[in-house]
Length: 318
Image 1 (cartoon, rainbow, N blue to C red):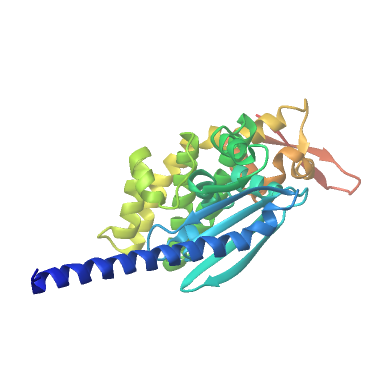
Image 2: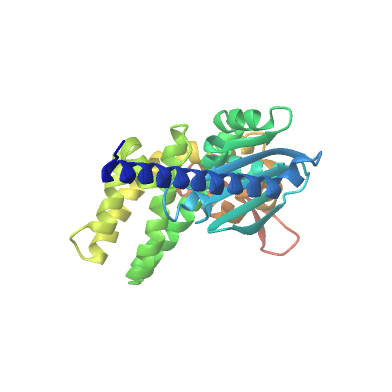
């Protein structure tokens, strides 16, 4: 039987496509095998609680450290520990994070590493011991009241520090530096608003803010894209932020105020700094106390010291 040219072309096409498919499958199998060799030694350790894989979804994906895939190994260790290793398999880059469970707790509770929230929620579970990853996801979604108050307090403290620095620089006429500080302050205000809604801040923050707090989003839009001069834009945003900061005082300082109520009398500043509830606020505690005194939520009292004419300053709920 005579076969035409089209028959041979079709057959060749099928063969080529089959070879390409086998080639892709082979590369994929090689990648999966190579990935297993990287994490298998950790899976064999009794201290390993879980292993998660995150694959990039787009070019230069920030969730995967600009790599093609990410491996996160979580180990049971009492002290915070974190190390990172880089690997190359063919044309693909693999980044391995080895982190202690105590460090992972810090990332979740203190919101220190927002990418970790996505790793936990969206990653593929390669290995887990005693349903550790499942429990970690549940913990991430159901923070205790104290943990929620701590997150709000940290964001409020950072917000105050940046805002005060930005306003000072603005009044000094240092508009470029003032812009930087006020922009940071707006970011902390946005995160605070999102946390107040019971949601974790995303890496793509401002799209999230637009759906949750349009007023803050509009302030940000005015600061970065307004038609006025830089000085005028900063001035308008500072005025708007003063009102919004006032509305965030109670959620942002509840942990501190509740801690101060534990004691019948006044507190020295060092006593507040050393209280375990306020450990994570030590750097910015002075800003928060100063703000609360200025707004009338906290008052100062003085006590005599051994020094002639020298009085110690203490703080109590107004």
